[in-house]
Length: 419
Image 1 (cartoon, rainbow, N blue to C red):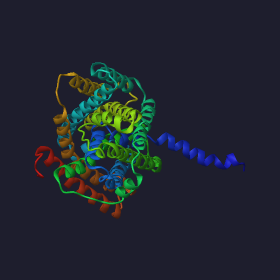
Image 2 (cartoon, helix red, strand yellow):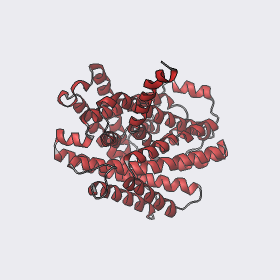
Image 3 (cartoon, rainbow, N blue to C red):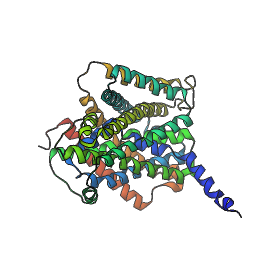
Image 4 (cartoon, rainbow, N blue to C red):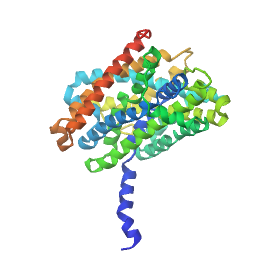
């Protein structure tokens, strides 16, 4: 047997892996959207490296949740909204859909706000950038196939490396970074608790489970693909949190060190220039643009999947507008509304973003509990139900997330609750 013949099984497995990967990597990285980048920027600028220790724990929580979503998708071949309707009925599903529709519209608005903010750094008016991006992402989804759209999204995921480069250019004291990453610390003051909870809340959002499972079903992945999809989820989750950590590092090494406070990712990008050099600032701004465009395409798509699955309407990127009119109409409406609101003379969209975060917080515990109920249903999952240890870990994590989500909702509604 020749050397190349011995390598053939490895090459075949690698090619199979390439055909399966996508949903996990894309879903995890889209979560580093304009709101997420702002959260990590504020965390680094206001609290330095002190929050880095929680990043490995956040990655673990993300892996656990997304793995259950992936397993549900490959075993049942159905989206999460479809399974919720079957297990909880139409009325409960409709309530979940309404909350998610409102939250995702607000999130879509924030993504176009990110587009406007990032392009304004380069001197481009929002009246040019926002319509251009809106039309581009609309054409991409409506006219593209699932395979072409996924390839483009995977390329967009790789562009998050600009934040890693920005972090390196900031020239942080790496011994301090490493020490902070392995040394848990906690300060019980309102700002610290709020940013602590927000980091977790922005990393695990309800739309992620819906989108990833819908993408798996749309792609036609099956039980035989589970091992590769598991790897897809793990790699995507670790990479997304790795990027988030470097956003914190970049802002810690520059803004925190010089006592500068920021409110948005745009502020962070502009402030990096004089402190870490023009290239770091440009890369940070380009990262924000990439994240905003990427998320502006995915969030409305996630919503369209959810609504159509819940009510049994045709859905999928591979279908035409004629074959899935409701699916593409919902997608179009969210793109148009999200872009149009940004073009209105509104002074601040912060409250809308906070409200969407609160709605996500209300929905997340419900979705996680429903997922655990579904994943432990032997009639549905067969031998792919959770094991005892996995269930203990998953339920413990869900309870912690619920407690933290309640804190997040309270502090959002009552900003002075913690003093």
